[in-house]
Image (tube, rainbow, N blue to C red; front, top):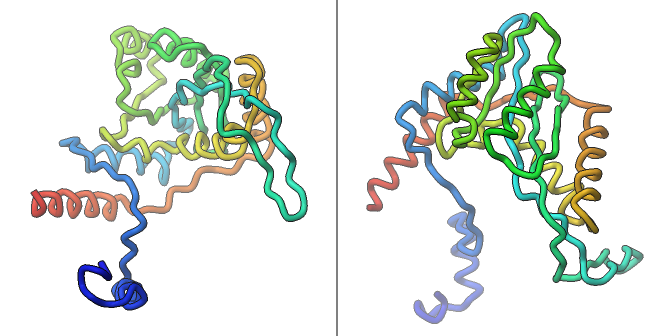
Length: 244
């Protein structure tokens, strides 16, 4: 830009700074095109901020294809003046899928590792959750629109378990699902720097993390106003229309 306008690079930086522009930074986004976006947002956020009495509210999803990565050489430990290190290349030793249910009322997580994430595994996980939730409690589940969650056999399972109710997030809005925050914490604290010689070692590390999390859980607190979310998405769509 400096070359094109005939001013110094320092002047360009001054102009950018005064205008609040940071062209070297960017972030990804995707706007939901769900026609029932507003209704679903209000439904899900309503469960977070005003859960029904005598009920459990669970945020359920699966973190699929978690890789058991083993570095090709041992990393060097952190010491004064040097960061911890690890090789850029790695060996793949298989994958696992973590099914997780976050209880938004107390912050505890029910987790199960499985090899795949089809409707069969999802039903197995639902059965595991059913056994752990006290009888007499209604169960409201927040989950995304993944095909396995809406499979006919899952619907049949729901019909046999009337205390369960599914609440789907809008399409392209998985950020509304509270358990995604737990998955992000798992990746940041356990997986990114981990070295796993086998799938069993990976699953053990994940189970340990879930257990540690449940030793001091905190209730999930939703702070954003659903009206602000809906308005922001509308503005985004209007902006895209003006561009295209």
